[in-house]
Picture 1 (tube, rainbow, N blue to C red):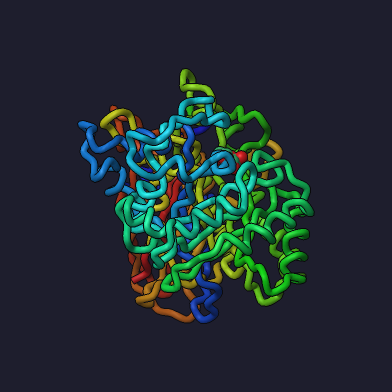
Picture 2 (picture 1 turned 135 degrees about the vertical axis):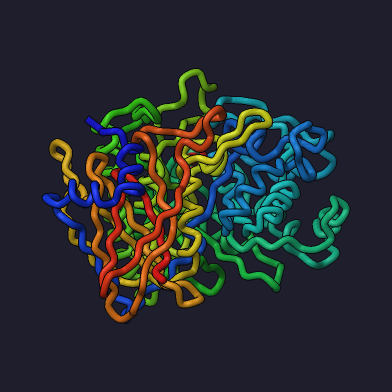
Length: 522
Ligand code: AHR
């Protein structure tokens, strides 16, 4: 049975000696950081977000309109903007997802009261009012300080439509499309640093064979041009669906044999922590079986990155093409009573651990994984933020993204962890997962997750090649692994301060069961 984690967290913080004594017979976890052999840079873009026109993700979650009683700036809610600014969102992928392959950008420009109502057949068949379009999205991205990552419509659009959108967005010239953008309130060209060429072309984006998609990719990559010379644009092709390597091989082979007329800079990978379709694992009210099974499932990300990176290495040993995991996260059973197709789910301490494990994995593959987008930002799937009318709460996953801020653009340091396993039934998981890095100011950081929901972990940390006196940071614990934040109790799961002093070359930290801790070494 999962014990009461809050009691243990409290014990760890207030009665260190008692917990240490209780642990005497338990195996300590040794963590060694090798500060002398830095690895790859952890691109800040692995902390990217995904905002699709789906359920209450955009409408209500981001856009409330300028006339709303909810405080907003040009229709975009201020509370959500402030929360996202605080986690330094590097990029936002928009408008989908499956939605992107049925999106026609011209419906979302010009006076809002004259925009057509269309349908959103993928997600509940609801009316899409098109009030949140190109200018509103760019305004939102600018308000939170994020790069725009646009997905163009390859599934049901045309290359000409995509080319026009890019010209409308990026040209500084007074072309008809450039003038139209000016007339719509934005004389300066927009920057589009990331461009997705289709979405899930193997699925909702057109059920294309790899070869057929490659033929489309060549056309779209040629004509969807960037005219903003002040800003580079990374073009990202559709890549693998989880473990399927057919797209990885086809796209990389085409890229290797490309002619001057087209190019790409990245391919995407989609992998959800779901176990089986349709998603049935509950977001709350689950036991240790569901806890351990989902953590085990999410660890598949490492193997997928290894497999796809190895294929990419065959065609691109210099690692010019980035692997962008632009959809990932836990996809759980929908919140009972929520509208069909809205993909609403609560977010627990287990989701926080899923987030930490994936971020650690992306960072370890930092030589190839240079971007990722959690699905999705607000009110959809593994969200950062949940809203209800004028209320907003930060989820446990949000707190992980906040704790991990020092890892944005930091340099990975090799870590060795020896501490045994967390076992549940047939499942064997490492008891502790750790990531270390040095930031631009030379400060060393350690993120360490205790996956065991029943036992605290006593960490003995040493660092080869550096001297440190202690550690200071925060820890994210929860009363139970299925604890969530609600509008009535929004801080049930929230980080608390934690510090420890080194004795000699070693530092001891006690981690609460099922917790995530990030400390700076001082
Ligand atoms: O994130 C929800 C959906 O999952 C996206 O629209 C699609 O790309 C994926 O299948």
